[in-house]
Image 1 (tube, rainbow, N blue to C red):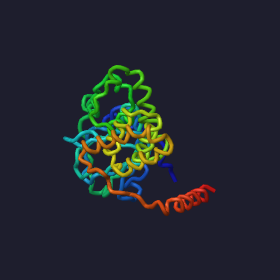
Image 2 (cartoon, one colour):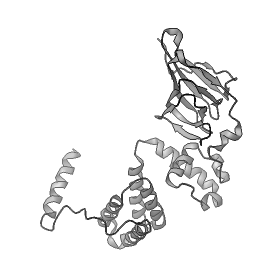
Image 3 (cartoon, one colour):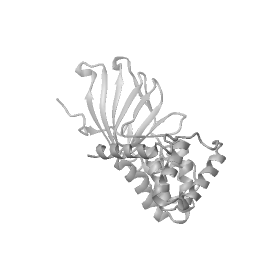
Length: 286
């Protein structure tokens, strides 16, 4: 019995750039029609361009890396991703600029497969993952850049230009460490941020995140729910400007107002339903 998590041996420099370790877990020589290997890439390490007659499957189990097929943009891959590489597709894969990456590589139908190794991936090609628009982006992690781009594609940042030291600390923390700390989904995280901007009266930031929320499939009704629920906590006088700003953004994005009513109570039933919900909340927490 062997451990698939062991690093294995150093990969041949003929086919790899940088520090790479390969642990061949299952091979045809053992009677199986499959090649299965654990491959560990240190930051900036990668395979050469290559292809497999039978295709290949990658299961990323640690870290952050890159995958690219010939003629297509580089994709960022990370823990939990499954990459299904088509038969005969010329491609490469490896670690990101600032993170190591480990994946399980599977080649099926090994008796019919042929791997063709081609030229190394040049630094110029490797660095096209995202040509830094700002000098500070050279010090941001790949995850921080990816997560920021997911929320604000092609955003022009004055702060990155004028206050790079702050951005280096904040973006690496907020868009990498915080997000990777827990399993909170993006929609929930965005709704929490929306609520916090209302509580802190950060109207400018709130308007930015309303657009972000709509970009990541938060519904207009969910945004309005955050607004309405904030009234008992901070007061209508502090929420009015946020309601107006939300309606302006909805109008700009062709969202018809008013939204469909979500009310489930009447003046006659409101007290009874509130008491019932309070009791359910109490027993759920005990």
